[in-house]
Length: 319
Length: 195
Image (cartoon, rainbow over all chains, first blue to last red; front, side, top):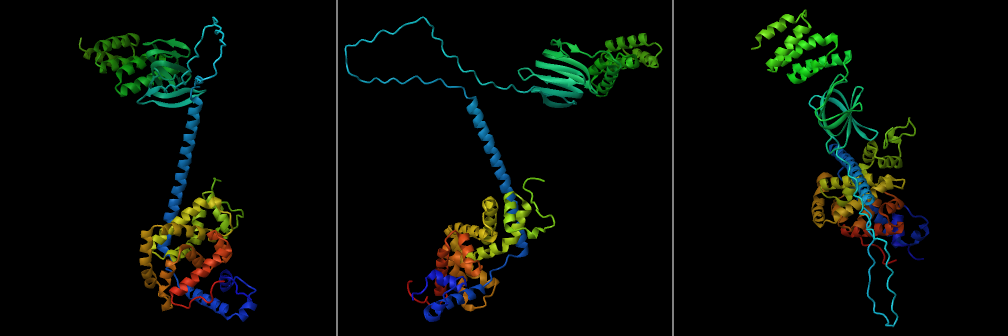
């Protein structure tokens, strides 16, 4: 009876093979080999490798998990970048202008000679119209530039159009050679296209719209460069103008303050607005204008509680 | 519930009761807790296996343990078995093999191994003091088979799966490793000739 293979002996020594008892009972060599293998394994298992210490284990866990997290983030970034690159590639291919077909290549081939004469080509009067040049891919204009030091505003897209909602403060919109933009202040809509416009808002009320360049539309009324739109005189707008005037006066923007006070025409605030407009002109150093405004104030409101103050201010102004 | 969050099918089940296959599946979905649990559950055996395979300086072993788990986390979606332990052994064997390709590090490992074990764990049998160096000197294939089957106690079928070889090939390697180690330790030569 032949001895089992090395593989079977090895498995038998590890206790994973059966049905060899009959052979092993009569084969001293195989029995000895299995004993030697088992002895080696038993002795080898007596060895212990240094265990992972608890601090090192914790450090290893933290480091491994952190690197795994970084792996995931990097994979996500790579996936995103690849997707963007693919999208850009597809966009370029789709936007690429159609190429003209190449002219057929003519190769002069030697052929058999004969006496046949080809007829002359038929000439027609049909003019040859060159193929139109491919239209350049449309380039989206840049969005309008905004400048504001104190504006409270939001910028969104409404039905595909750049739309700004101005709540408070001043705003300069420059849409020259840029995409048109719509500015909404309360219930007033200003369309700015290829122009530069300055707006002032107080508490969601449009105070002034000044067209600096080009042309703009305020509630569908067209304004040319240099024109200034002011809202209809109502109590609400007059109060808003008065607050705007005061705000500008505190910030020492005297010209803006005068303009705002002039628009506060409602009787509720007209008296105070006229006085403070004169004060703003005086503080701005515009003596002649200040004198005119004080005199107009005293003429319009001779019984005002501020009449004495206005007279004193008039006296203080150099003639 | 966010994508990639570990789902407990039985709310009353403790996380310790989740199977290895469930943990690996959660790892594939990006669950950090599952990764931590898988690491915690198997780091000791993986560390021991790699230490026995390479027996090098502790830092190199730690690097390989980390590389093994990182590779496992990345490959978790492709896990198709039932034993995460065997799967990790297979990954660890590949990590060790790739690590050994650097000849400089291999020489460094061979030089360090003789010092590592006697200093940390006193061998019960003085005649086995040469065992670590003898194991380290084995070819990678024989060493992986020997360490998995004889030192880690893996079943032949599991070890064969982990190493990606037929079971017969595994036992042949185990046999050859035992013979070489016996010779290295000054034991009896193998009985009999070719079969």
